[in-house]
Every structure is written in structure tokens, then in C-alpha cells.
Length: 169
Image (tube, rainbow, N blue to C red; front, side, top):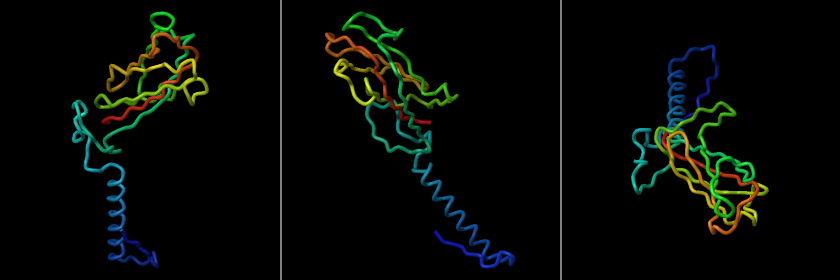
């Protein structure tokens, strides 16, 4: 990309203005290429319902949304079973109602989640058998279920669900 220097702005030079327009257009094309034109559009991305595919993330046609949800075993109203066989469950919206966010994907995204408890950085010994299952993924939300993997150890305390979703805008 070129650099344009106009020595005297009081002199109207048509050739200099054409040069300015060309440089602005080059910068605009470069910004478009970086931000939203990697060869994909919302209708031209991979088939998200296919059994197998690989795709490069294109910030112009896809979104990456992430968040954290706290589940406390002692106050969780959504649970079934008892003791070590207790199952906790809930729904997570991609939108954040506390900041009036109303984001929604155009199709079901790919969702991943991990669990953290105690200080929010690692699973505590009491909850080292905790397992999360993600299911019923839609364009606006997904559901989760947490249980003990060995069905012998009861979960206790706080468990954070750290999740991310990537899919078509």
C-alpha cells in the first residue's frame, strides 16, 4: 500500500486526489480481507450438520461465544436422584440477559464445556469425579447435565461450567 503526502492542501491537484482515493480503497480492501472475507459467507461455510468436517474460523461469517455458569450443589433446584447418583441439570442461553445481549446463531453451533470448582481454577478432590454432558444444542441455547462418573462419590460445593460455542452467525 502506498503512502500519500500532500504538500500544500490549498492546491487542488486532481492526480493527488486520485492517489488518495486509491490508497483509501487499498486500505479498505485489506481491512475487508482481514475481518470478513476469508472466502466464506454465512451461506457458504461448512455443513454444520455433517457427520465429519473441518473448517477454518472466519470472523465475518461465524461467531465464538463463551461464558461461565455457577452451579452450587446445595442450592441447585434442577436435580434428580440422591447422594452419589444425584444428577444436576440446566439450560444455558448464548445471550447474557444481565447486559441485555440478544445473540443467536443462525444454526446450532459446536459447544464444548469443562468443569472447575473450589477456587474456580481446578476441580477440588471432592468433585474430581464430576462429568458434564452437553445435549439439545440449538441456535439460542444448550442444556447440560452434571453427575459423578463413578456413581459412588457425591458431588458437593460449587462447580463452574466454563463453556464455548462456535458456529455460523
